[in-house]
Image (cartoon, rainbow, N blue to C red; front, side):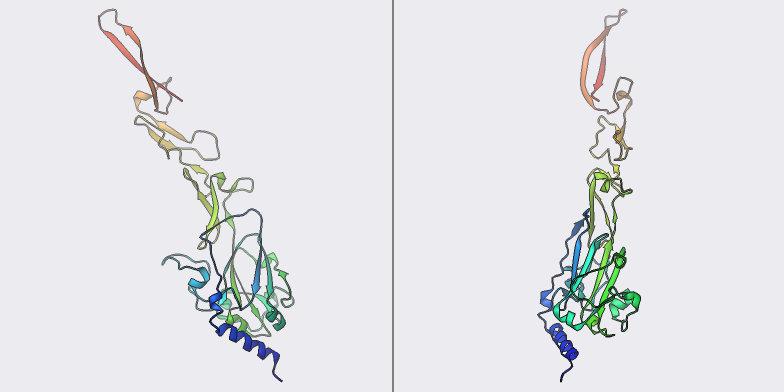
Amino acid sequence: MRNPDLVIIALLLSCVIDSTVYSQVTCRRATTREWYTQPKNISVRWTLMENTCSSLTQCWSRQTEPNGHLWTTGPYHFPQLCPLEFQLGDVMFVSADRTLEQYVIHLINVSKEEFENCLILEPRKEQLVFANSINGTLQVETKWLKTGMNYFTVVHRGSSQLCRLGLRIALLVKPQHCQSSPLLRLCSGNGECRTTFKDDSFSCQCHKHFSGLYCENIDGCYEQPCLNGGTCLSKRTAYTDLPSYECLCPSLFTGEELCLLCQKEHINIDECSSNPSSNQVTVIIRFYIKC
């Protein structure tokens, strides 16, 4: 009588060898992602029949720039489940297909080296994500989803064969760096809190006129408000209602009754004074500035 485990191993191997498996790659990555305020539930289904990849192109649907940084493991030469991005606070659920449930597999947390080389034979107790094998849908405790890279694989009776067939996954948990305090709005309300597939966190992409880590700085001189030869100085932050710039004006446009915007509204030539000692008339031109 044949050993049931050997039959299942043979079935799994045939699935991997069959080229149709790799034609079912479903790894897709949006160019950018925006931070969402409420955590999401993300499910990972352990199976060799779909959602696996074995190269950078397959896993990310594109190549990175020559000098670009990729958060996972660099160029891939081994099969794995599609890498995933998590937002800090997301909840992870795992399940296995029926064949793997019957095969009795354990989910373990591993190091990068163990992930890449499938070095685990007998997992240590502190590596077990669940005390028992994967059966049904299980929730992963938050302690396994730390900020940064997290690596997981499954084992069966001290064998690393399933890992080598592709039952391993890399997860990046991304924090957001879009506010300096929980009391402040994301990106000061002047930008979008986003990430790209090459970033290890969410950060601010500021709207025009704004800059800074939290888009807290406003470029008051962006639209060149100072006219008539005035020099604009951007001096305020986006957190205040005070003017965000100051104009240094030529002497002609300064004075107590003139606004420092250096913006000429109109010219009055209605103020004339006669010089009693001569027949000449002196015309005094005043520039009135709209403030």
